[in-house]
Length: 211
Ligand SMILES: *Cc1c(COP(=O)(O)O)cnc(C)c1O
Image 1 (cartoon, helix red, strand yellow):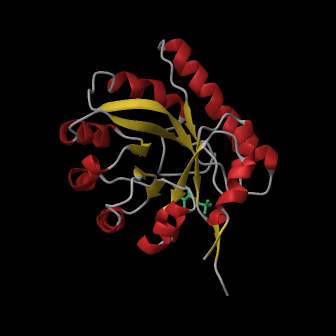
Image 2: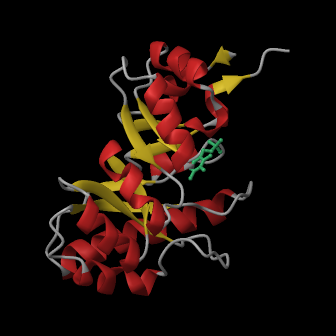
């Protein structure tokens, strides 16, 4: 692998890069760690546990960035520091029951306008926050969203603006101080930075396969 961590870091400010581990084997993750990445985000629970078991000697902060099925909460929830995909009450209730300390969570919001099964609709987010406000083991830190996969910068900007406005509305209406935005992937992270991203979930821009 040829790594592009330095180039990527030169393009960003103080956002946290969460490397999407679906592209990597544990030994490639070890290389990436030595390139200066220590936040890793996995989509698949079984793979997260496998990779974690092989990398116990590294000081890694683990994230789940993909869908977490309620039935898999028990085996993984105390192994991670961040969940980017909280979007339903059944999942929240199971986390509340199984987690032993407050888990930093992003509420995933459907901002792409696409018919997605993932993420709450904009108007569902405040009611959801109200519903889980007494859950001791869930600490909402902000919002996560994925823009449509497109080259149209305006479409992407509009999606990220929507999420920014929602964060402001939540903070105002519920007297909260949520700060974090998990937006930006390889194709749109430069736009995400202009729209107050604090966490970037990056995969393909971090490497090139050697031929
Ligand atoms: C794979 C993945 C990413 C990163 O994808 P790239 O486009 O390769 O940067 C970000 N977020 C989620 C949820 C992913 O599954």
